[in-house]
Length: 303
Length: 303
Image 1: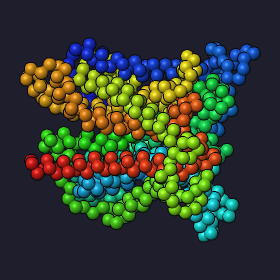
Image 2 (image 1 turned 60 degrees about the vertical axis):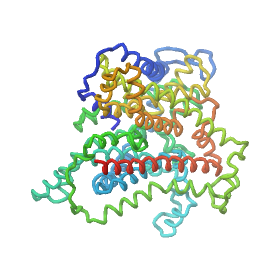
Image 3 (image 1 turned 90 degrees about the vertical axis):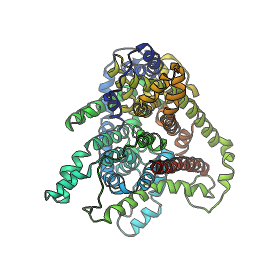
Image 4 (image 1 turned 180 degrees about the horizontal axis):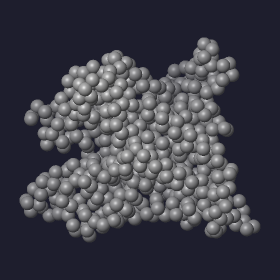
């Protein structure tokens, strides 16, 4: 797991050598790079978010100020987008979890006896990564467009109203987000389920628990690290995504998310302070939500 | 983005288990697997798994099939089968697709080389040396993976704007290297941590200089992990759209080309490139998996 990866190795008693001069040489270039191109940009973003328009300046010209009013402005102008981002991301995370859990269980537990089948199924799970993210989303748009076979046959069967749409609705955006982030959910779930000690399940059924109780009381708690990692890995990118919700992809005018307004403000309207303020809000909200979630689920050691 | 750490493990194929198999340790901790009944009926879960894979692969199949479409401009309705698009990929729009593809490959290769070098150095330092500020550095490495891509993209763009750097290929490479480093560290670190220190000790006992020990013993042992990390970096960079969109100026990359042409219809040539990349990646990964399985079998026979 991405989150666990940082802690597991440190616990190993590998008798680290002390000579910190070599360590410094090894660390310095990379760390400097991240300070320069990750930390400083965040500071730039914070400063930009407080800028005020240049007096008598052109569109897109700003000066440094302490204009916290920007935050109030974007909150009032874009609160529906903010709510939508987190709502869609939450829904997509739940759907991805429901979709992935049985799949990961089959690969990680049921298929244990056939390692080759197991690894081939893992390749299939990550196969969508090998084809462009944008083309995958566009493929769904065309498969589910109003003139497509799927939608016209659903209409012919009266399962859909004659003027119902799929693309351009919130449902389509959530569908796209779910589809695109399923591998992020399945892989961490698989990693924990693969290590699940089946003797615990046997002990449970030996003690006359029915399969459902065994699943609820043993399998789920033991796979909690995978659930937490998977939901975070799905929720964070989903909340910031703007491809699925874009008008040219699965979204419509009423499905725009925070990412869409950040993109529009930064690249089209050249309203850098608004885009920066929205980015800071997005990042802060995610950090707070993730913090609470990790605390609540009792898996702090993941971070 | 972060879920692709697991993808790296699969991509790398050899990276993870080879050594533990060498050491004669069992791969599983789950204990003996005796045939057990699965609570939901033994056919339900396999059926679900098959359906889930069909669902996951639908857009890939669609993209692949439509690369053979005899389309004129936009590639939406099926107009008949042709090999033309595969044979004349670069002939459309003055080769815009191919130019975008070539840019993506160059950016991916350069960013991968820089990120893999810097990330490997950090990974070695983190596992092998003791130093202060370890937790700060771990946090600095973790944060880029937990930050939504819009925020990373907008932040860098705000910084380039503040400093007055024009956006071109270099800024894209700088941005991609930044988000690849953390993934390289995670992937390579797992490999460094699983190295048997006795092998390096043996090298030193045989009067190898530190440089000799590193290049003759440590580095070859790390290679599978480094290759996995490099493949992951390249995949991340090649498919990145969100961060690229903020930092590319007028330079086109393959995902950016798809995004921009989405509004007016994507030519079938884009499907050709995506399908070719997909097939190439698939062959690579399945090859790695099969050779790993074969190696495991050979080792088992030897033991």
